[in-house]
Length: 200
Image (cartoon, rainbow, N blue to C red; front, side, top):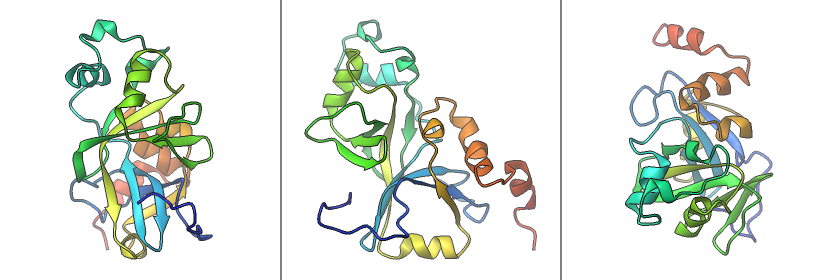
């Protein structure tokens, strides 16, 4: 669902923005989520939850996929062992995607927004394991998708707040902090927002 080269992006596209769940979205998997939007057009939208962890570390995942024989074989750059593995969304949960800085490129890499790209193949995992991958990265298993007009309807129903994404939040390994930090971009206090949930 990523943007076709010939498809014009509308001025109100949310590509490169955060969706921040409001208390009205109290059901899993979207409760208290921050989503990075990779594609948004009249055809629909697609993005990744960036603040809900999977119960597997990045080195463990590389070992499970057979990219390395053991975690000791991984030659990650500084901080590379802290690459987060997130639950990207409820769609295709067995499929992996890597959001990363734009200093890595392959045949399957797609530019998402300024300074951030997406690669959905094992090549980037091999590169990271060899210490030749991108400077910063986050991995998502599965993605979040919306049909035409669906996301706009959810926003109109007060389901999401939106703001331009901060890449320091996208790639931060402290997942628990991301919801509050994203809200702070809008001057909203997460504790106050939660305390007011459900009150008329």
